[in-house]
Image (cartoon, rainbow, N blue to C red; front, side, top):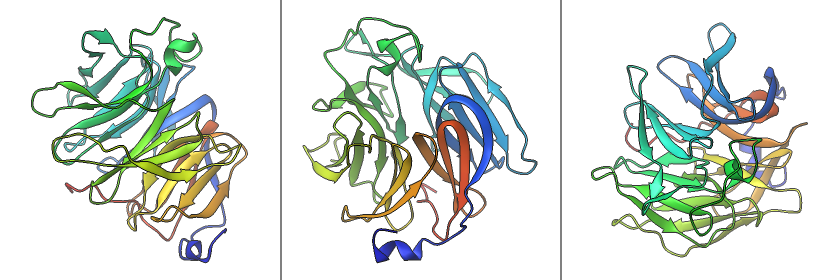
Length: 292
């Protein structure tokens, strides 16, 4: 605990390791209706599934297009960022896959990394170059786009528009509770920025919300129902108050990539951390989607 405001978080002293054996775990997403969690193992080009009722872990999809981040849309369908195929996809109820975005102005995306869905159905995603930098997490290739940016997919037309172009390596992202602001991690600059979201689907320039230290390489993030920002950063999960103050640090033995709240009460924090999937029960609950 770094600040007394973190005292209300409480919960278990035990951080449970649910699974060991991934090369780089990422993109955990919890399915409330089925009480299971799916996450990515990028270098092994697979997705895994953990059953909350039995504790069993098995394959969900392989090959998986070197999937990184995942989320759910308003209908509970899986939205995935495929680094290998350089696209954002949706898994339909019948198991078929629909391509949501793979190009901007006719140019192939770099390697979509993480995505969030707004209550109007628009899909927002980051597009760094990790999947084309080497063959480790995708396929080495020359970029067709001038940098690493943030994009929005219109829910009606499907048009892909660039909404932020001044990031170095945009990574995890999350909306504020009322969706008036968007938090975006810039891993290389070691900070999280917060930008105002406008009704026409554009973003303001924004400001730095949280600046990390030398070891705080911000990655994925989620909000709890009080508006606190929980972010993966190096070998820890950092908790920031809505005013940006760092109030808590949960240390882990591995590099943390991403996290998600789940469980029946949304008070179980699942953490994807290089070789492992961890969980911890908290006194706080994850933010409920605006449309629920």
